[in-house]
Image (cartoon, rainbow, N blue to C red; front, top):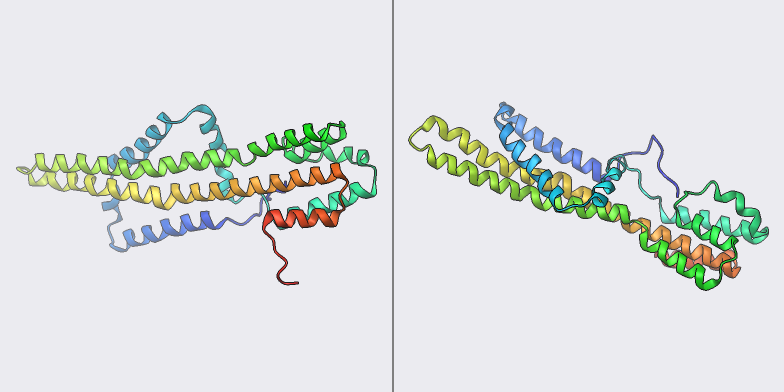
Length: 260
């Protein structure tokens, strides 16, 4: 699959996160005393608490999926269906003009764990139609899984952050009530109570949940592109005309021809 290069612009999700944080920071600074909103104990409780609670309900495989988090932030996704359809149709046209075995050299340039490479390798091995279909179905079931796992993990963290903020609020209120006879101690306790709620809400709704939604979108797109590759391999096995393949791919991608 095609990937984004170094100059790929940031995705809307990342731009939205940065813009939201900038708006919040602007409001905090506008009061002239932004230091009032810095409470290390509240940060520790919300950030570290969210992390530890999320880790406690995760396994190694789920945590490994977070290695793709920089891709979410940098905008390296899975490519557009329209561009991939054009590539696959051109590939099918070459395979139809030439002996399919002349395309063996193409395998080295395909992603090693991609559905297209595995499917073409099985096709060139002379697998039966039933074996080929089973292999492609199995590969399709794995498509987009890292993004889906990362999305589930981020969503759990997004649900946890406000809860940790609520824990901090309760702790702050308890301290405040215990210090009613010492007015000088009421302010710091109230700060912890309010700022933990603020930190939890901002972390969840401005960072974690937007990233989870983007990961879900990328998982869906990865599954779609894998389905396009599956249809291409099956079309090559059946020696279907590229024009028929294009129609199948556009239908699978939901690309209509209403403009014609």
